[in-house]
Length: 514
Ligand code: GAP
Image 1: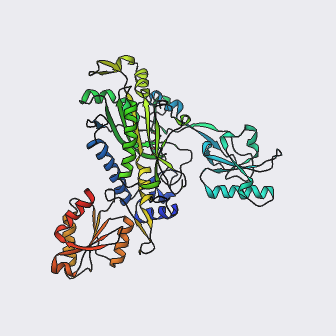
Image 2: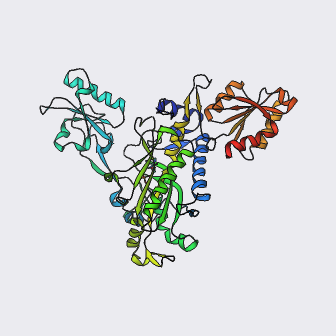
Image 3: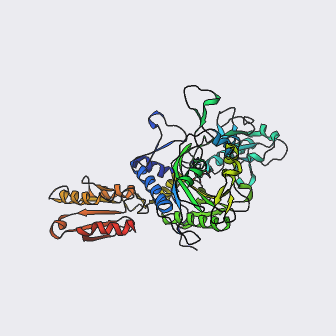
């Protein structure tokens, strides 16, 4: 047995509804029916995501810990463009190799990622076996597939009678027998075709091949192509890192699971440049540091895991045998499985060498290590995290159904990430209380995001703050006017105590700034 919390016990639809109702996340261009794979953040969501990115920047770039060599980590920031010279993406391998296998349904016109498609295989092995497709992890889809197959086979659906196979393992001759997830007749699914995930556009007035540009699918390449600029303009020397937070775009075949797989999202990436023979020191350092960081912002317990990659999962740039791992979170839609939050990869010297090759600068662009008096292409350890997936994990972790509260739910954000740090209420909107509450609000808002709320019953105001995840509420009542004390209500324990109004700022500082 363990004390750690088990998988989240709520339905994803409930969290999505709360996100919309309280202004965490909206569907993009909702008034026009939305657009698949794009999401907007409302006022609370924007503050939450900003706090996550700020925490990352502060802990990794502005005030990082010491490295494994006992010296302060040296990490500098960068803000490169979303559109770059298209040669960047030829060199990086994205033009040739950033593909997903795609399957089309000729009947329903739906499109699927072949590697996300599963098929339920009928029990009769007489050559007429029918197979019904469904999407991996979609329990309802699997149930539907089972019923459809049972109907065809004219018997009860008992999962034990059926096998499940990945679509990619089927022989081409099996295709005519597969019923697509959204089709009525079998045989409508195409063979998988490779599909490049980069969004294309054109720079300039003429739309031809020469003006074609791509929206970056990762922020990393902006770092690699500026490697020499950073060296020339700063005092950093290997080992050091360049960090960037920014948008990335991927024309995902099947965007789904709320913001988890979007077509526009934000990454928080560090390319950490090291001596070629030091990966064994730096890779575990970064893996453990990043894992500990997610825990430090509240993803504790069994919902967060670190998973080393198998060999066959390595990306095209990753170095074999040197370690690549994912930091994964158990989202309600992946449970009991996990979904990737961040990858930590040893990218070797792949990118710097490719850019040296494609720019024609070649070996002479190798880095000169003055301490060792030698030239080499530095190797790279890359912790690459998703800001939207991180925000989603934080939302899932915080979402706590609680029937004893008027809101029925409380968002238990880590105080550092909470979009609103405190609610400040006059118990009643008269008798001098609003003036005292407003004065306190003015003092606190210099440093903290606080809400002054004089309207409705106190119960309703607590409920609003519970849904916004404000860790503390301060209430000014008739006693305040007499003895200069206020009631503090603590979000998670619901405990209430009275403290002096002069101590409120210190009280918050101790609990929020740590
Ligand atoms: N530079 C390495 C790189 O881009 P990746 O594993 O493809 O690696 C890194 O992406 C992180 O970006 C992922 O761990 C995930 O958090 C986030 N990410 C990737 N694709 C995403 C998508 N379609 N929607 C939301 N986040 C995504």
